[in-house]
Length: 249
Image (cartoon, rainbow, N blue to C red; front, side, top):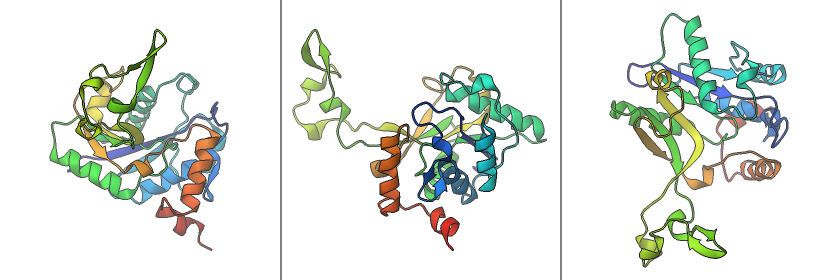
């Protein structure tokens, strides 16, 4: 819960992944990728219910084997490669609320492709939201190892040019304003904000930032990224607290 408000978590997992086929059920450190988000949710008392939204029977069965709640099948029109995440979240919220007598006040997005969120991330996000009732949501961000203002350039008419027009006016890298990137680890929105905005959240409402270390800022879209994450988790560089209890003999 956030204050007195109920929190619904949604784990979206489309079956036909083009970048890495079958990635949502591919084994990461001994567990299917989707299981990491499900098991994370089970360790978070702030989450009142966590549901999986998928169009795939195979993903649904895999999720259920690891304690996942799959109360509906995502319609095909919301499972296309060009489908954005926002209508998927809106559909999950609407479907679950049609089945329950009491509405939810908050909705969290737990994308399986960013499996390195921790219970303390959820706890801190809920704390920050509870302290700012005027916020419509909170988004996990991280500070990249380089400054996009200072380092990014583009080709303009064959010549290197600053991507940020005023970057050349900053004399020292140390003087550049801090910049953060959205890392995909965690999003939480007010349910009323989701209901009211059919086109998406970017550019709408007021959002807080949840800083997360760059070392845990992961998004798995292809085999190289998956293999890199496998090395980091198996090598102990990233510790996921649910792995030991699930893989213990």
